[in-house]
Length: 383
Image (cartoon, rainbow, N blue to C red; front, side, top):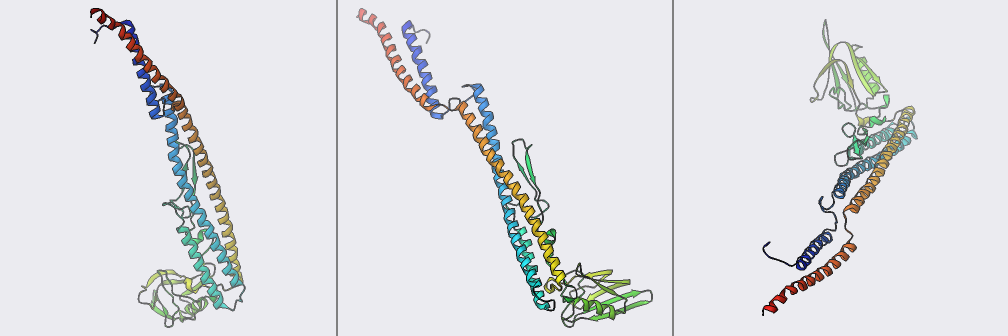
């Protein structure tokens, strides 16, 4: 439209009106978005600085979610240890009850021992069930937890898992053997070679250079471990030497010759070797002597101390993660606030600017109109 001739006053008022319209657009955009810097064109330095702060806040926010999940894993483990500690106290109560009876009361002591074994089985079950979202700090290998605290992963806390899914890990055994006072029950090992029901028997087939000899050892449901050992040694004339290890609760058979041993249960296959081991079943355990019960109580006390120490370790880890979680929340707030200070618009100020520009726009329109009227006077002369 360069062919159109405008007077100087009209052109000046037009430019002023256009400038006002442009400023109105800027102010209206700030009020609509709430930001005075919406792109690098508005203010490159503020825009890129704010973007850096916002990006770090976003990265830390993602880590904050992971910290929250790690806290839940630690809480699940702590709750598991608390329950296990209560079960250890219950087991200690059973052992104490057994100790209050006389050694001759084998039936009562066997009952307490069986109950003790069941409590420790529950201890192992609690440990197995103390996981959270696929991670269990009480289940050992493969369950270590790593908590990352900063955006480049250079600051982290490694929490090592313990394995309480087996009571032996804290020095306890869910099966307590009592030596000669224990009935030798049905064996669950592969070398099933003893039983307690009437009519059960062990059969040893011994092979020497001069030939083979078969020995049959009859058993009854009243046989104790000592009875089984004595019967084997007597019936085999020493060709098979049976012995009992009270510490492990095992009967071992040995021979200078090759031998196999079979049980009368048809489901049990004959096994071969020079030193077969049979272990009494948990159902037949008992606390035979005061010394054995006191040993159990000592082991329970040691287990309780270990549980408390581990609980303290997990507690320290939990406290550390919670402190870092709070710090992360605060630093995210600081970063976000800093970014906002660089980019957010002052709505009160922008509202005042809008009002002033609208007034200016009205005045500019009026001035433009007055400037145009000067040119219209020529038409009056021509008329």
